Structures are given as C-alpha cells and as structure tokens.
Length: 166
Ligand code: OFO
Image 1 (cartoon, rainbow, N blue to C red):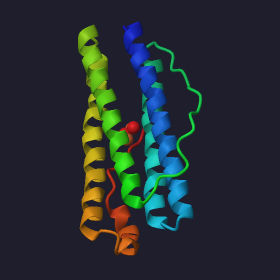
Image 2 (cartoon, rainbow, N blue to C red; image 1 turned 180 degrees about the vertical axis):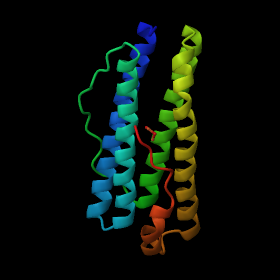
Image 3 (cartoon, rainbow, N blue to C red; image 1 turned 135 degrees about the horizontal axis):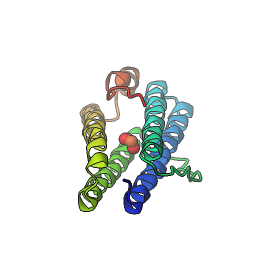
C-alpha cells in the first residue's frame, strides 16, 4: 500500500530525474558547439540514462497503485564555463541526487514501506557508480591540466557507468 507521503517523494524524484536528463542534454549541446565531440557524446548518453531513471520512477509509482505526474520542463543553464567547471557542476548535481535518494530511503523507513525501500536500493548503488565515474573524470582533468584536452575528449567514452534499461 503506497502512502501519500511516499507517492509525493517519488513524484518529486520523477521531476529531479527529468531535470537531470535536461541538464545533461543542455551540457551536451554546449560542449558540442564548443568543439568537444567526445564530452558531448558522453553527456548525450548520460541524458538518455537519466531519462531511463525517470521512466523507472514513473512505471514503479503506477505499478504500486499511485499516479506518476509528468512535470513541466525547467530550463537548465545555457553556459557551463570550461570543461573542468562543467564536470564539477555534474558532480555537484549527482551529489544533490544522491542526497535526494537517501532522503527517500529514510522516508521509506519512517513509513515502514519496505517494498519501496527494497526497490530504491538499485538507485542507491547507481549513485555510487555515477559519482565514482565523475570523480574519475575530474581526477583525469586534474592530472592533465588545460593541456591535452584533445586526447581527453577522444578517450572520455571509456569512463562510463554501465548502461541501464527500464
Ligand atoms: Fe545521475 O542518476 Fe539519475 O539522476
């Protein structure tokens, strides 16, 4: 039985995942026009993955008797500075998402919703992987500095967390 409180936090997460997808899409477009095809490909793939995350929430909410609400689009920023600043913004966003997932876990325990608690564990693990892959990218950027971004751009697709499916 889905409580109103859990339905509400799950729907809030639909919006956050949708925004994640649009944020990475905006970053992909920005890096594409700035001449970083590899970074842009990484971000386009990330945007698709976030859309799958959103879909997972939509399908789960409806499956357990709630009503998934599709939110309005919020426009992400247009400019993201240099490549390092952009990936720092990605990490910051993923940390925000991790906190949000952890808050859902806490709400599930409060409400004794062990079904959703079990279901959300996939996202707990996913956030560890997502933060780790962005941290790896930031480590590489720290090593190479502003030189050699050509090679970084060429090789970045090797640093991807696994693909997900709904
Ligand atoms: Fe980036 O994992 Fe969903 O938001």
